[in-house]
Image (cartoon, rainbow, N blue to C red):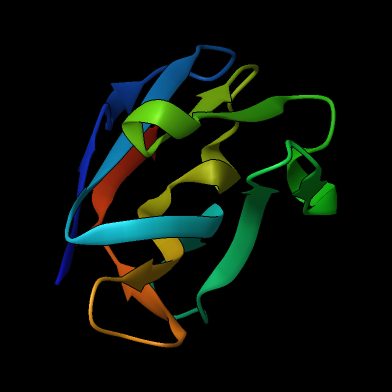
Length: 121
């Protein structure tokens, strides 16, 4: 019903920048919350940043001051600008969306396939 397609991951040196993008498509009526999570090897998936449709944002402490999340509501797209990247930011980054679709009364959570971010010299 809702497909999330991420792009923008890759290999970057410490101190570098990357911008992740995630586009939601399908029979969408509304997307309430969009966010980014990450999962490093051997660790649990954790929130990186989230943004509601009104623009209010929430960041994990690890990314405050370095990461910026923003979205294009008209395109149902969310972005994560990551600056001053550190080796500990290495993980698979997943896009998420809490969305309502035609034919459904409720909002459900949807996930992308993930994009690898590797920070290494």
